[in-house]
Length: 464
Image 1 (cartoon, rainbow, N blue to C red):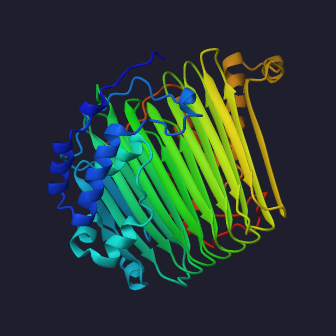
Image 2 (cartoon, helix red, strand yellow; image 1 turned 120 degrees about the vertical axis):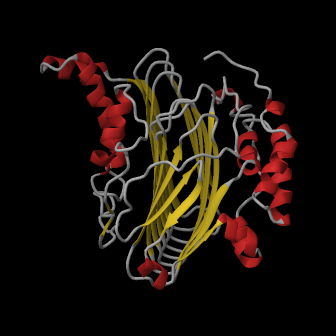
């Protein structure tokens, strides 16, 4: 990848950010944040930590032509699944479908327009955790914010809540920048999916997708957030996902990178409540000129908390990957168990990946470990499959798919490997994965269930 020197000052002039804010009727509180973010965007580096700047792969990126005010016809979507919340973000805006039974049960959904109009505590809750950005691309995400919502799930809700969220980039130069604020009440159960695709209309220049989630789990809450990132290969994306856990809460972040040109993922979870448990599971498949940059930050504060971060990537051609995990165990976090696993498989001499695990331990009564490797595909495994009559390319593919399946099998979603296989196969074979009428590559029904490593991780019903 030849390095480029992008003209960042041309990406988002101040007057353009202010015009977007006026079009969205920003309240004063956010108008100030948008302006500050645009100013920070001009001055901040792509990577704030000098230790990692040599690993950054955001070269050849030019977002000068993105248009966060673009408008157009709504993208076609299949029928909503009965009993599920569905939210669609596209060039036409945000469309939400919420079953009346869920509204009657106390679930509250507030789109960005209503948050801006009502202000007060609703606005404060929506912006909670919106710390000043520390790098250029997350500053750009705030400066271009044009979609968002607040979702509140009440305490003690017996039935699991399923949210399907679709983001569809359907016109050239489109820019979607989303922020969500979600509270899962005491003892409630939540499964949210974030699925990102692009329509058949291509874009000669980059598209922009920014995704922010702030998740608050009350005591005893259970939540799974599953992401499938499969836009076209011109899309530049940043993800920022943060969470806090109450006592006995359980959370699984699951993210699967299958598309896009340059993608940055930042997850930060604070395990505050005693006995809370977090899984952060990520997979990447990159080919051509794709690059992924992932960072996971798990901070243990409460007693007897458990967390694990498992990241695996397969990279071919000239693709690039970087994964870094940080576990911080505060002095108060006795009886913590925490684990980081970061592994990458390289299928070509031009591919590259870096894995950097970090443990910061301020308490003695803990168990914290890490595992990491970057290596080419095992030639002995390839030889074994070839000796059984399998062509070399098929053998390498089987090994690579099994390498990623290690993560999928540890996710609390039944059959996740099989659910994701059609999308992975399409990318692996270099076929078109665009979103089009009659061709909707969405996830099917999901069943949150136990795994071999966590048999008690269970919801009690299928979530459509």
